[in-house]
Image 1: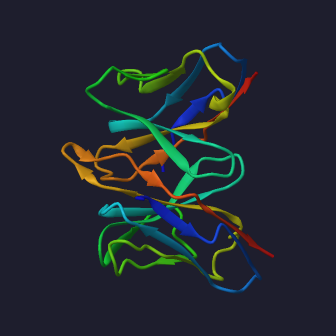
Image 2: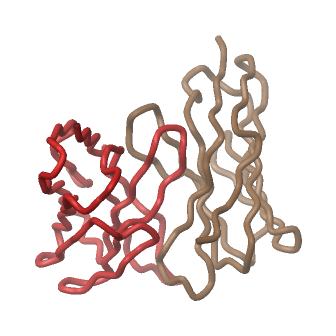
Length: 115
Length: 112
């Protein structure tokens, strides 16, 4: 059963704590992405990675960190430096097709609440 | 970043009617994609249309792209209550590699 998994579905943390969100894919996709979605809004790109051991900042990388040690995994750490971390976090992956990068496949998301 | 804009922000129709959503963007694109999101879930890819294409169909979905006007539209024909969701356009800008820029979405409600 191929796809992208994110865990946990809901996560609660106290302010000042770092928290790591998991994202795993078994689609053999090269590229992986992390997005943040606030209520009633579209998605904003946090970080993306096109290849193992390499990643680039997206539009809102401040207060977040990532690693890409394995092709299948792209964990996101929300640090205490992120001023407003409560949001819905979505992970995605894609492969390179004949004409460029293909569509992105999304995981079910993790809803993070920080109090 | 340069976000696309969807219009309308919300749309409410009766089952069986057609739903049209529009998306505008700002600079040259490699392709434009439409996604669907049910409440509290991940996004599901619907259609990808490349910059050299003008129209694409998939089942009850029809997407058009007008690069001269920098706009795209998604038409859902004979809508069903199960089509109730948010619909997002995402643009792959030239020189942006595999990065997508998402619009704010259109929230569609189809009443039975």
